[in-house]
Amino acid sequence: MIKVLIVDDQPRSRNSVRALLSTWSWAGEVREASNGREALELVREFEPDVVLMDVRMPEIDGMEATALIKAQWPQVKIVVLSMYPEYRAEALAVGADSFVAKADAPLEMLNVLAALVGEA
Image: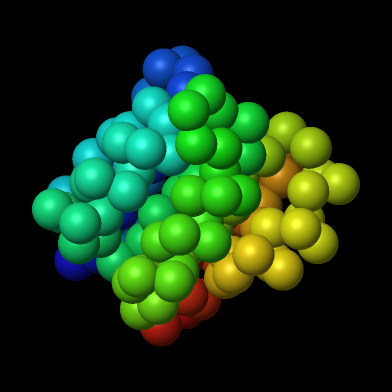
């Protein structure tokens, strides 16, 4: 089972991702953070296998949080989820393992997760 951290400042988005993860047989414990600062605290305490990271958030945005997490916990896989596909190159440049546009089909995110954790 895979431990997943969902990071998004919009509760509706977090709920949607959580609902999608509930259909994935490899999803284990799922926790949530509403900004990059909370994400850093939860990565430290929860030690997730995968972080699903939004880009635009208060306090610490997703790009900075991704870079900070990868610097301290390089084994944690990070998938940046964004409504804005133009962030793809920047997300990968700061260390994200993958990028999924929120407009992509839900199965796309599950396929990316499966590939990252070796369950494809």
